[in-house]
Image 1 (cartoon, rainbow, N blue to C red):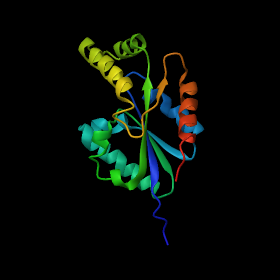
Image 2: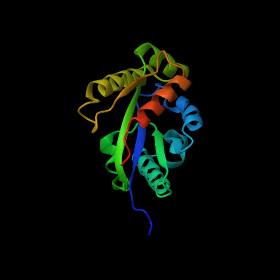
Image 3: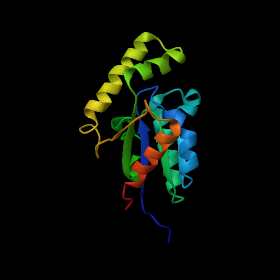
Length: 168
């Protein structure tokens, strides 16, 4: 008989410029038993953020059927994830916030050619994530600060966080 056990899903979220995409190859190296994805990689093909999230949850659900867990790296909010068809396929969804100081984020986004208005929006969003991590997320969302850490160090902090979660 096939095992119908549900597995958790891990989501690394945060404002743009905090290191979500940068950490992906490091996570793949140190988490060989997980599938790790940067959700933004296929956005141009889909063109709609909610559809993108739905696609990634379907992918993660199918991976879970092979008894493997997934880490999705990209800005995803619980209320958007809960709208996805495959939301119910997971035992739990755990979020981790990647965060850096305002100056670092602003410099990273300016290097990408971002408009000042968008940079200001992400400053507000980053602040909102910190202020609401205990009330908008269940379980509460921890934060890993990326300002002073290398991508490899951040990846190891993420691995430690994942390892601290008891998979039932």
